[in-house]
Image 1: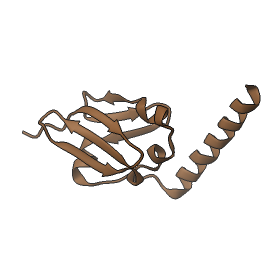
Image 2 (image 1 turned 90 degrees about the vertical axis):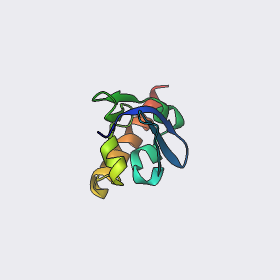
Image 3 (image 1 turned 45 degrees about the vertical axis):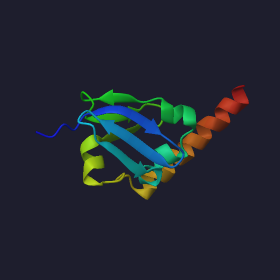
Length: 101
């Protein structure tokens, strides 16, 4: 039986690194997940396991990644249109926070 549960997660400026329960370590380019790529180090560090470690969720970036997809070599399936919309919303929220500060 394959153990597809994440045990630890690390996000660098270039890679997403996921250690699995069975001892394997997966490393994929951050370019596979544009929301992580555009996130700040603090946002990237704010993650939690979902589904008993079968997935990883980044609440600040509204990103969910399944371990099974990493194992299969599947990058983000988000459309360019959806990503651009998210980036625009992100810019607006950042500008609002700056004005309020």
